[in-house]
Amino acid sequence: MSEETKEALFSPKNKKLIAEPININNPVTIQVLGICSALAVTVQIDNALIMSIAVMAVLVIGNVLVSLMRNAIPSKIRIIVQLVVVAALVIIVSEVLKAYVYDVSKQLSVFVGLIITNCIIMGRLEAFAMGNKPWASALDGVGNGFGYGLVLVIVAFFKEVFGSGTITIPGFEKFHVIPQAFYDMGYENNGLMLLPPSSLIIVAIYIWFQKSKNPELIDEHGS
Amino acid sequence: MAINRDSNVYTLSFAALMVVLVGGFLAFVSMSLKPIQKANQTNEKMQNILQAIGIEETETVSRDEAGAIFNDYVKRRITIDYNGKILSDLGVADPINPQDKLDAFNIDIRKEYSKYIKPIMNANKGNDEKIKSELANNENIHFPLFICESNGNKYMVTSCSGKGLWDDIWGYIGFESDGKTISGAIFDHKGETPGLGSVITEDWFEKQFRSKSIHENGYSAIQVLKPGKNLDNHQVDGISGATFTGVGVDEMMGRSMEVYYNFVQSNPKVLN
Image (tube, rainbow over all chains, first blue to last red; front, side, top):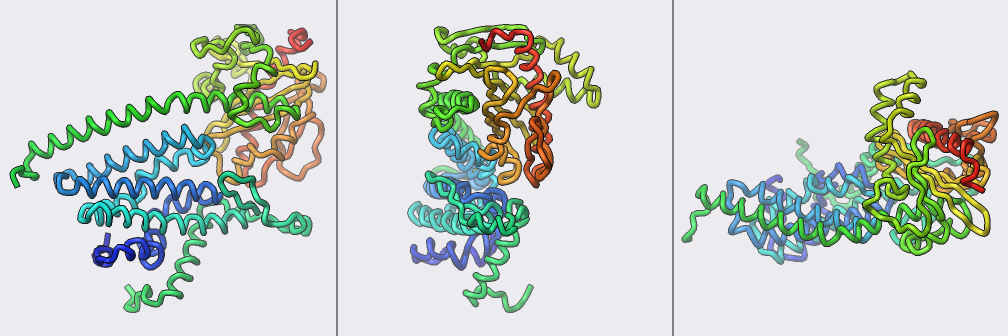
């Protein structure tokens, strides 16, 4: 975590804790964390949604737990303690998915387990929850989880529409958005959209759009 | 502060306490959710078998309903070996006992492939005769077979398992009462590329297999071709962008259906 991120998020306003990660301090597009799963689970919107909810749940509960324990955690093993908290939560999420939303858990397969390695979670625990009160940490978790989910769902939307011509929302039938007439005229789904590299392109366009809307994000000095 | 949080004793006790608490809690969660997870798996298997029959009544059965109506359709559960020898033959009157490893319903078709069939195939790559003879000699390999009945018509649901591009693929294939014409097919996979290989679980792919035949002067394997070719009675379209998943389906169907074909040839009565 960079110094600037820390400063921005240490600001007292709780509202900012939620608002900032959604836009100007988005974990995926600005901090470029959690990219791995943003590439992998964005082929269908329903997967992206469930994944986001799972990450948000782990992030919020993990933030609160670590925040509650922050004064008791020995500094020498604090990363290990955070890891144990995250790992335990992820296992619980995975078991709950298997029991109550079996189909989704099958689709997400290994990616649920890989939430453990999602840099956003460890990043927030280390940078925020270790130094803040539980309520602020919970809000921070909601904000970052939401910021992550927003990017995931937007990327998944474009990937699914152009890759499969459908929109899948959990609990509903697959919705075909590209009319059959298009296919009859020779339109074809773009196979590249179903593969991870296309997410990079969409995320990049998203960052471009986001930065053009928020001039303060542009690094004028270059690097 | 009274406690020195940097001392080794504190660090070690903290770690030990945390491990015990977290471990205990996870064990508790796992134990309490296990029955529900197990029921999900059982119901899913029943749903797959019912859907593979390929008849309207069971086509859209949901996972939760499958358990209730399974016995209305599935009348016999038979386990055979590679040579077609019957190892177990259970009817509706015999409840599914999870302890009975030979009950056709309890056979884990993915494990049959990964544990017994795959090693033989890998060790004898390219030598089909050797693979067949080793498969025939291995008494651990079991093939489940379900005789189903609906409106007086008999069906046979068989299974197949193999490997796609990334990981296991498997399926249940239903046959008409002649034991040669496919009436329905259900495929599933563990980790095929979403949107490409994973398409084998979609209706259009599965429905292509219907009314295809595995018989033409003896056994004739179903072939998965590259999309867009002219198809005969033993061929289906593959999926563009998922060539290797298609090759996997082709291979597992060809290998597994031959066993059932031979079984029906030597035991024509099971479908009467």
